[in-house]
Image (tube, rainbow, N blue to C red):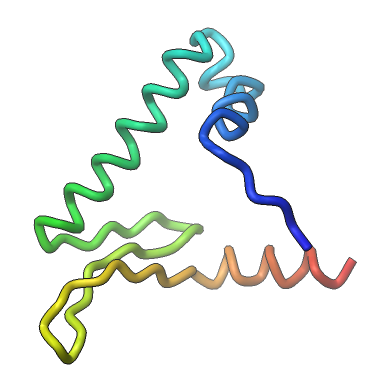
Length: 87
């Protein structure tokens, strides 16, 4: 079973990537917070977010009229996860 990583662990992993290596860990954590807040704000506004190679985040209306977030993974992500489980 896979482990769940938290925001701090995600920031540490991003720090190792070229785009974030010049940034401080605090700035990386702030980026993560801002990024997820932006996603949430867009979904609250009724907008869908499509991230090529990853998936689509969109609000959907349940039969009772309440809005819920929905994530639909794209084929590339599904295939990557499926391939990793074959190992």
